[in-house]
Image (cartoon, rainbow, N blue to C red; front, side, top):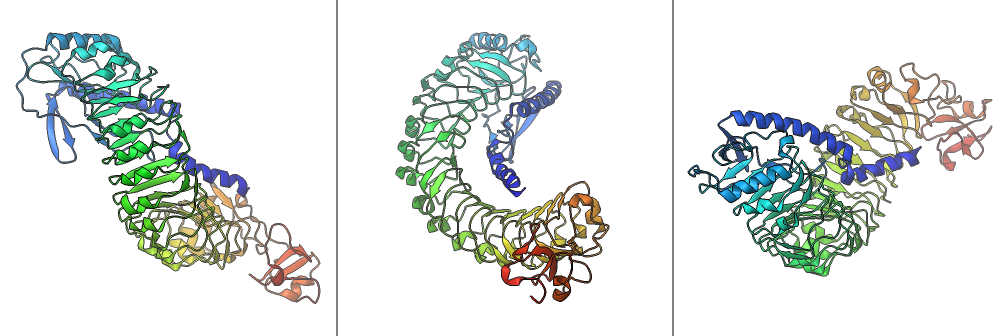
Length: 610
């Protein structure tokens, strides 16, 4: 039923923010990657040096055994954070004579506390001198002080102990994708640590109420099991990136973050935060990325946030009230705006026309009204998702100027008018959803250049005319939904080339015939979703149509009655005639039955009615 399919399509949007976070899938990925990095680590031990590339430009050599320290973060393609490349210091140094004794003690404590004997690769650990003996994952300065501990994907478990701070110059702990369960609270008081990445572990220990880390620049404890409140005091003057996402934090977003003048990125998504968004965050003049979706926050946009002029990526749900004008006026650098699943009201501000760098605009599942701004055809726009609102008016013909557009979702609104012919200029488009609106007129036959399309959903509208022959050029198409419209005539044989099609839905229209030359398509559809019922197909049906397509011919619509009103209404089988599509259909004086559609002014029933 279409009601069930609507729920399925709604979960497409839900999957944007939830796919990939199931524990089973994360576990499978972690196990697979752990095995991979074990092999890589073994290879590196046998090599004299390893190289890493920073920002695609400069290649630097690292001591042997040191794995790459840039890693794409996140769990799924649609919620993956930007790639992080951790900087490394100048590599021209004299090899130390020996490791500082306190650092040696710190490393031994770390090895024991994280169950080093069970690591996937513990090459050279606890043998000889760490800095001169090339313990895996270490980098030391020429004075014998440990600067980096880099051991991702290596089955570290247990606790990061406070003793690790005996390494007085330790700058980096890169330990993501392990099984660590505890972090000693003293670690969050370190004066030397600059980068901590312990994401995708199993940490359950609470964070202290005060974080005092004079040198910390990036703190990432995402994708763990940390509960409790987010620390309320942050003595971290150098912090520029904070990632606490995918945990179980409760309470309100901390206002104290507004004092951290260097903050550029805040990731708080996938927690249980509630309340409203702090006005104090408007002081973060360098903030570029803010992710706060998948919480229980219900908030208007704070008025002070107009000062966030460096913003490039804002993603939230649960927002209420109107979209503020200041986004279009002052967020001139923004490329991604995702404000979904909330209670936004009013219209899309015309000031959004000023956002010349905007590539992604998601506003789906809100209560937005009014029309789509005519200037929405920004040349920079790649994704436009306005589904599940109450938008009215027509699709602007200026959409043709969004030549980079790949995703256009306008379904489940109250849009009317016709599909503009200019839509044929969207040659980069891959996904088109206009279903469940009040769109009328014919489908423009302009798809010959839209060869990248994989999805067309025009179902549940008031479309008339025939299926465009130019659909035959869409050889990458996987889904076509034209159901519940008023389409007439035949399925064109140009569609015989659509052999990637896995869902073909044309049910409940006025289609009456299938052109010859579609054997390849229907042979392919035998094993996929094919729905052709609810149309007045001519009798007899072609033998090439699979039974799975559920195409049943109207007993009235045979060669003698099709297109012949007099023959139809004088037949014995309670047949009536619809002069739209010229079909003879089973019905009664009120109209067709069995789900067929015909307006009363086009319906003829009974002798003499023609």
